[in-house]
Image (tube, rainbow, N blue to C red; front, side, top):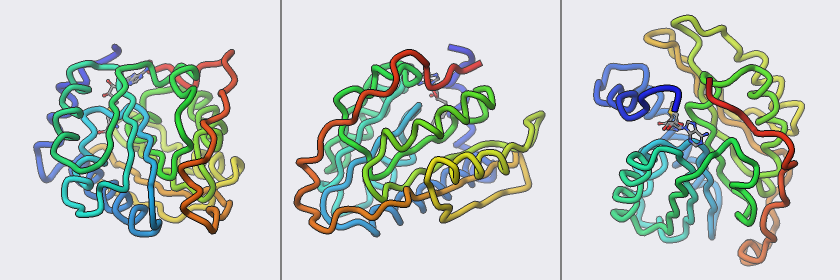
Length: 223
Ligand SMILES: C[S@@+](CC[C@H](N)C(=O)[O-])C[C@H]1O[C@@H](n2cnc3c(N)ncnc32)[C@H](O)[C@@H]1O
């Protein structure tokens, strides 16, 4: 672990913080993605932390039972917090205490309709950001939404233009790009894989498991 990520989560407790703004924005996009898609929805959150973005939305939704979610988080305490929060929802949630940078972690998972890459891009190299974005379609089903975040302040380079270009090159269309010029200057981005979802939603459960990502390169390494 490169940082105390449990302490990092305490930033959410200040309702005036950039983190609180970011959480509200991400939750809004999670809710929108669920509203847009009828039938079963599969969610994958990479480096999920305590999962409060996805789980906070699911806790309030009467249709949460149509959602199955996989949260990948390395810290076991944060993972346990996510499991406890998941128990308060009707969704089918699995929390994997696993290394999200290892391609093998994703073997056998179903393609995601909603993929969260939140809280990652500020902690890894630009090369790893680009590689993760390039690999993202392999984690997604047709028409999937991907949410991403990155801070642009407090010593971070503003890489938003690069991130947006990399998503475009990987086949995604941008649907939102929201910024706050306070605190750590967070950005919340939403993109959609530019492939229409299958017309017959009932076939979704039969979708094959994800193809294996190239095993020879990690997606990212926190620095
Ligand atoms: C900045 S936090 C973001 C948490 C959550 N996505 C959010 O936005 O609230 C980064 C998270 O990544 C987790 N993490 C770091 N390296 C990881 C890895 N290799 N695999 C899985 N999780 C990791 C940390 O434990 C931490 O919870």
